[in-house]
Image (cartoon, rainbow, N blue to C red):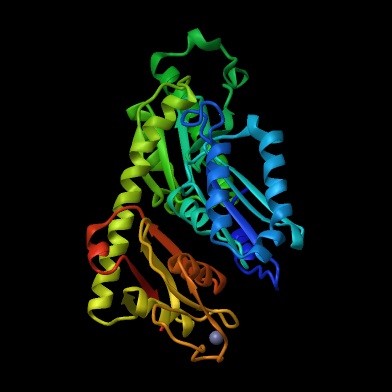
Length: 373
Ligand SMILES: [Zn+2]
């Protein structure tokens, strides 16, 4: 399972002279009817071999072979996106079968290239979905563009408790009270299960579905911490299909994500303007990284920049300097400065937030960061 902890470990890997092949490939069967991704992969491979040192190509030969055999053996299990990080020399192999699209990209470098995986983690957070009625409930987990049914809760009625006279001898009033009592028991049960679920999974938001009455009642009963996580609701029948539920949930989560990203950007711009522990633009961000001050790196998904990296201490800059001003190490030209910045940010345990689209941040340089001090 793709998670932050694992990416942190991967980001910290160093080749020590050996190389990593990082491949991102769109394998979506809809856009790759005849397995066209193999052709795309070969083209990317050809492009990279033209611009890469022969010695390096020799080092990654086994990786390419492993990737090709992986294609043949696993194509039936492919979803939309595929990410492979491989270093045969280091006996390192990670594959991610993703239900979300990736950009076709291959990178050969001394460290694994994880930017797209970071994007995915950031853009597809986890949500809990609770669909509930008077005596049953269904719980779902939404992540990485997919919905997964997590469990079902059914609270059976206990007629034994009301045996005297049976159902039909109860007065209307009595009968209603009984139903109400039972619904109350059921919802308490649901709350318990939901709390367990929230404790186990890292959930950003909760979406509640059901009849209008059910949604209102559940919201009233939710413990405060869970209540604060509710980001929306929808109406659906208990037997609704997973796809139908997912479509309704996406409306709520999409709105929530957009609002959150907008708030992040405006907070960043305001803080930077007041010079309150925030910076904007590649140059200032790179300086903050070098000083270990980053709390959260924020950049536009499409933002690219290039510059120079120190081979030894990994200092990053847009300026052509040589040798490294920090360690006198050799500097090399790099075409994916943002990725390297994100990687160093992840390594120092700081956060990365990828913004899908935002004009204000684009105008302010496409990248910025909240600082620790
Ligand atoms: Zn250096």
